[in-house]
Length: 164
Image (cartoon, rainbow, N blue to C red; front, side, top):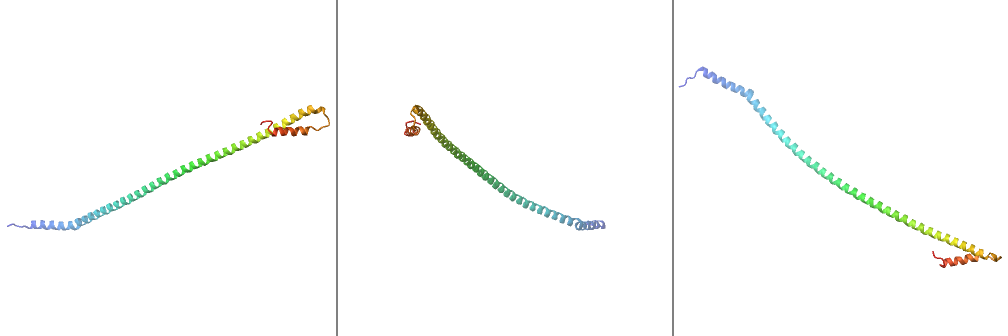
């Protein structure tokens, strides 16, 4: 059979004692450290996934807000263009109305000036005709022909004897 000697038994005993001491001193703390590290890594991964999910939600919210702002900017720009066109139309209408008013006033003024000129011309013609008739009738003293001549000339001009 096998002879067990004291050296072999002491070596086996030392090995088992060293294994027990190393297990108590090194293996359990290293295993605990590794388990804690694995848990920390798992927690960090879960937190990173949660942060990524939160960031994705924020990105979507910001994208929606950006789209909404772009739509609002577009709508306001369209409104500004429409208001600008309306203001331009109002200005053009106002200018056209002002031009019509000025033209009408100018036409009225032209009619008034023509009428005044016609009246002045009529008076001048009547004065000249009266003066000419009085010159001819000077040799007949004592009669008041001037008023009679003026009335006769006014009747002729008013009746259309002198065209305008």
